[in-house]
Length: 194
Image (tube, rainbow, N blue to C red; front, side, top):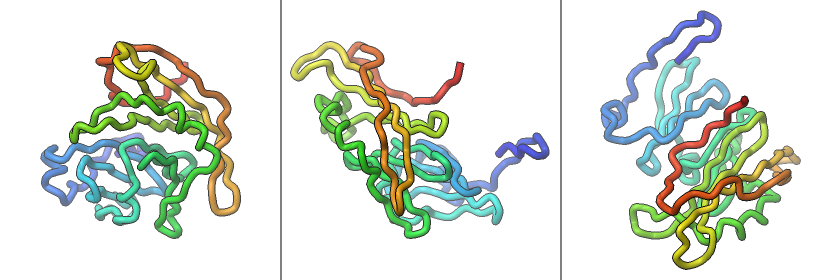
C-alpha cells in the first residue's frame, strides 16, 4: 500500500486465507471504496475486504460476492459490475446490488459472444473501466454468426447520473474499435491518458 502523505510503501498484513497468500487462489481485481480495499478472487463467494483504518482483513459479505464478477470497477466510491448479463452497482448502505438503468440497448450488441468458459459454455467477455468518472464498457463478439475468423472489439462510453436511490446510464457513444483474429483473448483493460 502506498501512503501518499509519507510517500512510502507499506506491506499489508498477510491475508488470512493461506490459499490467497500462496497464490493458489488468484486475485482477479483490486479496488478501493471508502478507505477499504476490495479483493476479488477466483473462488466464488470467498472474496476479501481490507479496512485501512482498522488494519484488518475480513471476508466480503455474501451479498457483495454473489453479483461481484471479474468485470467491475469503482467510480466515485461506488462499485459497478457486469454480472449475469446485467450492469449493476453495489449499495453499501443496504448491502444489495441494483441495476444501472438505461443500458438495456447494449444487450443486442453482445450476441455472438466469443468466450468459452471452463465449463465449455459460451459466455460474454465484458470489461468495465473507470475513465475520468465515466463508465467504459468493452466487449468482444464474433463479426457474424457461424464460423467467423475474426472478433470485433466493441466499446461504449457511459455517463452516469445518480437519480434518487439509483443510477441511470446515458450512452454517449458506442461502436467497434478494432477487429482481431478469433484466437484473441482479453487480459485486462486499463484507462490510459495520452
